[in-house]
Length: 83
Image (cartoon, rainbow, N blue to C red; front, side):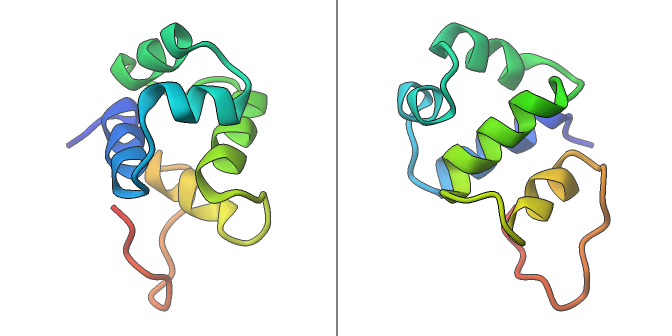
């Protein structure tokens, strides 16, 4: 099973974002984002919020997809598959 970082990398790429692009959008360094993408566990909640905002351009209802991607929430049957 893929770990959080692998799932985040797939999600980032599926959205057409580069590593530096997402890092800028999330307000973190590209080095830190690279470290997150290679880590088995999710980062701090505040970093997850920043990544979700950077990927999805908002922290509204689609925010749950980031949590579902890291195993923190289940997908709902009516949710679009993004990973």
